[in-house]
Length: 421
Image (cartoon, rainbow, N blue to C red):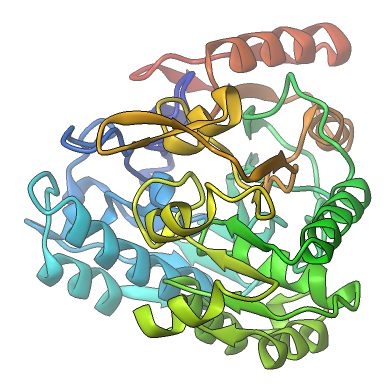
């Protein structure tokens, strides 16, 4: 069995891995690395569509799905994923096409072709292609998100994709019931970070929200549209929060998709109760009405780059009675990162001090250092380990620690490298 690294080598973004055995080639994810506005995304290494027997998509996020439509420019492939993954991927790909239309390698025709050639599969289903079998298991990262197992001959590969072993308020924990593994491809995003517990993050957020409400303020929560917005809303619902909760932007479309797949949720009842409690914001009039009374507003973009976040920042950031809760990852060079580090935001190219109270809370969809090591502990056999999907330090240090703690052959691969077992 061979694995060629097409992307996500000591970086977070443009995931892609070509797995070959017994004349069968599987492409695991094929994403993009989105960069600053006006700069083209980075893509994984090119593969010829005719050389691929199946594309297996772990989850919908664009760093894993964002380049799959390019495979349909000059060819056709079968794309396998869970139903919510496919539906969310279409939503995110179409949105990327609007925002990055000058840089995308594909158009709406290719997205449509991708969907027409997609094959839905649920957790635990096994698909056989030639002499190889693959299966999806719950990853706990995002609704429909999957780890991938490929079995070919006597060799078995396990790809974590993005994994959250403990799950979340919305999702069950990852399914780590595995047989012996020969190759492990593991994410390393937070392998050098110990995160605050979910319970501590939730209680801190609720406490902060109540403090803002008591001073007649508005709490603005910029959050990713897929998963994070819904989880945060469920946190308020679970804690019997008494003030109005508003939701804006693409998260509303995501709500409809998630509600179609209750079997993928930890507690569908909490989610549906949450949808019944929140108020949807549809237009500028709704936005204007919402900001004048104590309430919580959940809206993209999670890093304060684009979306309706600009509106809420302009309206709420300069009043001491308001609050801003940062519950999403804040990437380098983003407005959210600048706010977190300096207490300032940029308006019309001028840095301005924010008067609202700003607090960060950890609600990552990725496993941290301790939970990633728990994943490794559950691996049976003596696998070759590839530590990917993290910055240089996270991948190299995690790889070295795996080697020292478990005695496995472990590598932080470079793009274009091939590994054989």
